[in-house]
Length: 459
Image (cartoon, rainbow, N blue to C red; front, side, top):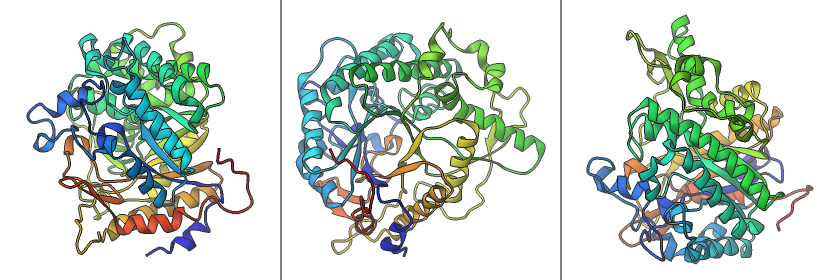
């Protein structure tokens, strides 16, 4: 087992160690205090969409257990908490009246973090689009970008004075491709044209959100959280290497290009540009406003080969087999070097600001035995990826923090409650929280920070 004291010595004293969650995955109280349905409430209640027809009605009951959960975060010794704000709590119909009771909850959350000396990293959108906006086309409708702009302004006007950082979106790859092309996440579309519209509208909403945040709170660090993919060719053939390049443009470039370069990738536009929605004058300038930071969510590499089918749609790839035998319980290949390869590639291709690893963790489904959870594989996974992160810092990359995914077991989207990513175990029948072996180890590491001779403002 990696000694946390030894690992700590590899990080600068002001490196930020935190934990992360998302509103729909933990809050529950789906009909309480004026909240109205999101697209995930609808999706979860449709047969065949989510494992066991699990839903977010109760989840971890965080909405009703807020103070206890904030105490739990403090007890883990972390310096920061990354959470998301539920748009359907704040503006239940997506547009229209603001729900003061929803904002009150996030007031209590942020004030509770401040009282415990924990930095507040908020995410404005983690996939829970107000269901009412689906009637207008959801993320395929340009009007949704402007609804998001108003929501961003509303949330930051109320909470921004106490936030330490804010992200506009979490993993737009998921809410675009996984949700509108592959049909795995809400709203469950399987249509390239819908996905391309969702892509540009989401990118535009990000830019409009950045402008709204800066108008309300110019000094608040604003960023974007991306689940970038480290893509390896399935072989060294020219065809597979070309496939990997196309996959990089499709899975990464379609988001990084607009945000950090003001343009969609050339290969992407040559293949799909005629099916994109209208890119109006000023759109790309809005999308590419300079950011203060960006977040990387990383779990597993992507391996691709060329799709041999005639007329295969861009990026024209098929999955290639993993090269490492180690898997998590959700079936994902464990390959920590990919994290380093990805950061190096992205920084070579784009001019990027400071980076936080905003999610990293592993699904292992060990249960409580004798009052404890021995999840050694998760501990090893986190330690190995932190080891890579320390290597990147030594190479000069601006890695500023790490947020373990997740604070606690929760609603794992299409997998329901059967997959567990938490460093804290949740018994969904009793809502009892049990810190796992990985959580105790992470506390030993995180509680050593901040430290040393450096500038640190805990305000």
